[in-house]
Every structure is written in structure tokens, then in C-alpha cells.
Amino acid sequence: MLFNQIAYGPIHSRRFGCSLGINLMPADVKICTFNCIYCECGFNTKVHNARIPSRDEIRNALESKLEELKAQGICPDVLTFSGNGEPTLHPDFDSVMDDTIDLRNRYFPQAKVTVLTNSTQLHRPEVIRGLLKADNRLLKFDSAVERTMRLIDQPVSKNFTVVKLIEYLQHFNGNLTIQTIFLRGSYLGNNIDNTTPEEISAWIDALKQIRPKNVMIYAIDRATPVRELEKINKTELECIAGLARKEGFEVSVAS
Ligand code: SF4
Image (cartoon, rainbow, N blue to C red; front, top):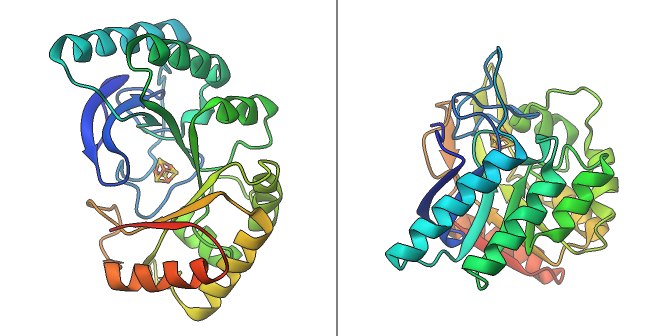
């Protein structure tokens, strides 16, 4: 599923309520530094001449959409950066955040600006700067076990490791939300399961190092490019959440 507009929706999100999506990537192709086996946009494809929208195009598209919603009497709860890939890959991400906050303040001051990111661009200071401007930043952390992270997220760069990721996530001084999807299944002959006791124990140890202000855990919701994936039920997610809560973390569950 690809989003063919810069500002799309609003859609009802199980995690955020009435959510107006903002897609900073091209309308016809997904661009991402991960290739997650559960990605709702499907697997990465070879990209030829894909055009990333400019800062001005994004601002104009967002303003038109907000005007339209205002005229219809629809108030979004959140303006969510998501879409066809990783939003922080946009070369003007930091300035786009400034524009979005300015427009939000003018049209829907109560709406929260939220960024969903895969955490791969945290080595770029301007990305950290942009993320810190959001009301909510949700940073992906799907497994603290290197092999499992590589199987689930399939990072494009070999240099991206769990150890480095934890180090970068610590730079937020706790001012972040960690998002983790739990799943089981198999892909290309590998069993994948980030719900085992060893996985959960490593995940909680990592949380202790990152010290996030909250943690959001969730299960597969829509069709995934790998068919052999199991949706973890709410009871099991609550059980995992309970283990993290015992260690003092604030955890929300979406299933
Ligand atoms: S990080 Fe997000 S957009 Fe990128 S592959 Fe994973 S789920 Fe898809």
C-alpha cells in the first residue's frame, strides 16, 4: 500500500486517533533504509528517478489539506510523519518540521506533531534537531538481539547495529517513545521470534539503557509482504508490557 499524496487522510489510527498523515517520500515508490518483513508499504524496490517533494511543495500541500479540514469541521488529533518510507531521509527534514509546527499552530493548535522513524538517521545532527521539535517522536526498536533485528528490519546498511542504535537513542536523554512490534514467523528458512524470554530480557535491558519516557508495543495490523508472520494477540502483548512495567516503564499496547 503506497500513499499517493503528501498530506493524506485523516485516517483512524489505533495508536493515535484521528491522524492526518504526512508523506515526505515520492508518491509512487517507497524509499527506506530498512526493509522490514512486516512493512505495510511492501518490500523495497529498485528506485529510478524517484522525485522527493521539495520543502515548498510539502508546505503548500499541507496548508491546502489543513484549510480543507477546517472548512469541513474535522479536527485531527495528530499530524503524523509516516508514509512511503523513512521521513528523516528527506534532505530538509528539519525545516519541514519548522513549517509543520507553524501550520499546526495556525490551523489546529491542539493537534500533536508526531514522527514515526526507523532510527537509522540518528547520526545526522539535523535529524536529531528536527525530531526534538516534534511533540512526540516514536523511534523503532524491534529487537535488542542483533540477528533478530537484522531478520525483522533488514537494514540496508551493514554498519547499522543494535549497539550503535542504543548509543544514539541514549542521546535523547529519555525524551522519546520507543516503538516495538512483536511477531513470530519464518522467512527464507529462518525462524523469527522476538517474544522469547531471551528476547524480552535483552529488550528490557536495552530499555534500561535508553530510559524512554514511554514505550509503545503493537502487533501486525495489515497485510505484510511476508505471509508467514503471526499476529501476537493482545493477552500476550499485555504480558510483555507487564514485564516492562514491573521495571518501571510506562507501556501502552496496541493490537
Ligand atoms: S522502517 Fe517503516 S517504512 Fe521502512 S521498511 Fe520498516 S516499516 Fe517499512
